[in-house]
Image (tube, rainbow, N blue to C red; front, top):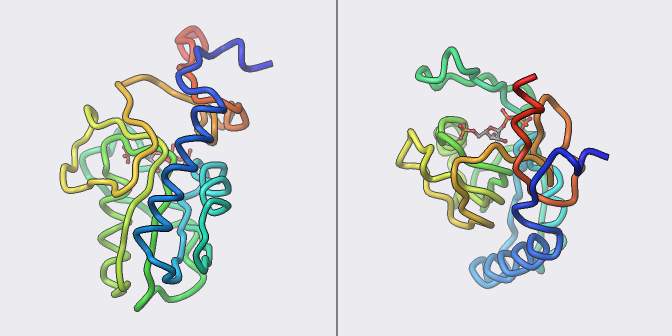
Length: 180
Ligand code: PRP
């Protein structure tokens, strides 16, 4: 069981309660308007599934997947879209859902691209935020589950080498796993 590799930062109950609070906030903020929830694959898939079930609004969903820019090219900020949105977003209230914001590079590029398509509004919701790592300071999430220090975290959708996404907690990965 991979739980042995992590130190729990947020357990299932804490996460579910926080997502429920965020859902209520979103319900209030959008006041019955239709929302297009856009999940950024892969990490957002579990958080997004939880979040949309808290929404009492007309909801449509779509997904976007971008290539990671990689450590070597971190300053370039270039991303490549691997999975496009299925439909136009013009005039729609778009809510981007992410598992984590780190440097902010990924979301800044995604927001730049989506803004050119004239959505009625564009907001960001993330489960985890690491503000101390931010390189793009213009990225400010509208809804944040938890702000965390600079730990290597996995679970609830977040991976290390494509593993640990299924863990029902957010936990700090034991460094022995990635320093082997
Ligand atoms: C993670 C996360 C964000 C991005 C955040 O994705 O889901 O998309 O990194 O980092 P940034 O703020 O420094 O740009 P990752 O590339 O690990 O892909 P995944 O979602 O498929 O795990």
